[in-house]
Image 1 (cartoon, helix red, strand yellow):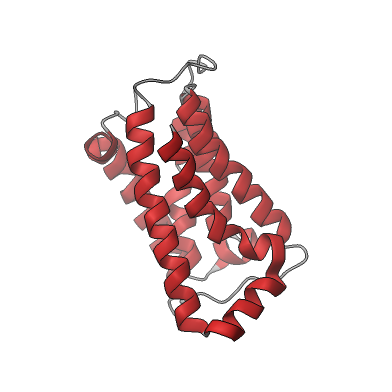
Image 2 (image 1 turned 90 degrees about the vertical axis):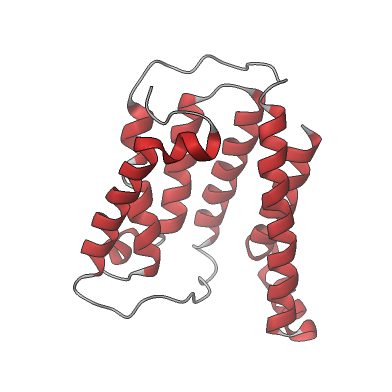
Length: 188
C-alpha cells in the first residue's frame, strides 16, 4: 500500500505545483530553465506513475473493502465520453470550446466511474486521489491561466476525430484491452 501512496504523491505532487503555488513554479523555471524543469517534472512523474501501477497491483490483493459497489451500468455510461474528451484536448474544436478543460473533465468522469465500480481501499486511494486532484485543478483554473500545450491545428474535422477516435478507443478497451492491461473485464 505504501508504494501506491508514494506513487500518488510523486505523480500528483508535480501536477499540483501550479494549483498550489504558480509563482513558485515560475520562479523554479526561471532559476533552472524550462527544459531542466520539465525534465525533473517528467522524471518524478514517471517514477510516480510506475510506482502507482506496481503499488496498485500489489495492494488490490491485500486491502479491506470499504464499500460494495452498486450493481449498475453507470460506470460504462460515464466512461463513454472519457476518450473523446481526452482526444478533444489535443484536437481543438467545438468540444474543447464548450468544455474548456476536456482532459480534466475526462479524469473526473474516469475517476468517478471507477469509484462506482470498485470499493477496495486501494481503489479509493487511486481513483479518489485522481478525482480530488482533477476537481482541485479545475477549480484553480478560475484564478490561473492554463499553460499552452501542443495541439493539432484547428480544423472543422477535429470534433469528428475526437468523437470517432474516442469511441473506437472505448470499444477497444471494452473488447479486451482493459482486461489485457489490468486483468479486469471492463463490462461485467
